[in-house]
Image 1: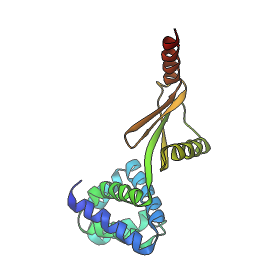
Image 2 (image 1 turned 180 degrees about the vertical axis):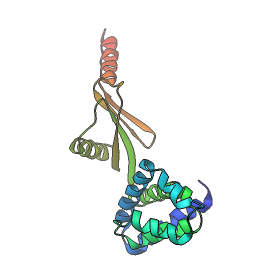
Image 3 (image 1 turned 120 degrees about the vertical axis):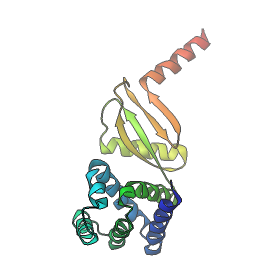
Amino acid sequence: MDNEFRNYAEALLSIAKDEGKISEYLKEAQRMEVSLEENPELMHLLSSAFLNQEEKEEAVNKIYASVPLKELKNFVLVVTKKGLAYRLDAILREFIRLANRELGIVQGTVYSAQKLSEDEIASIEQAVSKKEGVKAELKNAVDPSLIGGFRIVLSGKEIDYSLEESLRRLSKSLKKGA
């Protein structure tokens, strides 16, 4: 990531620290990042040369009216004013990475054959957190190639609890015993 964008993310983290609300900022930044992923036209709107700064500010205030953190909205306004709205997603991702590191959170993905419930994900997060000695936050991704069980990728490390892997270990164990 470009240093300028990292500087913006670090500045936002500094604001969150000063307010003692890193977790709250993290939660809202994650929501914003999802909204930008789901609606890429938002960044196009906020970076449009066809809108003046006042119209962009009005758009930010309407789009993020439900964001309870005033300084986070102000941050988005500053980014927009500096002409960097087209990189708001990257700045938020970097902030999320920095905030997670600050809070000792490791994000990962749990791959499963079918979509998992929030309770199932929470249970897996708890088990992985205990086993790995970190606070794991997992998102679920469906992998139709899995027959059963699940596979977790956490900080580049793969933890495989799939049916296929269990069968592979069983087969290996049986071959050793033979």
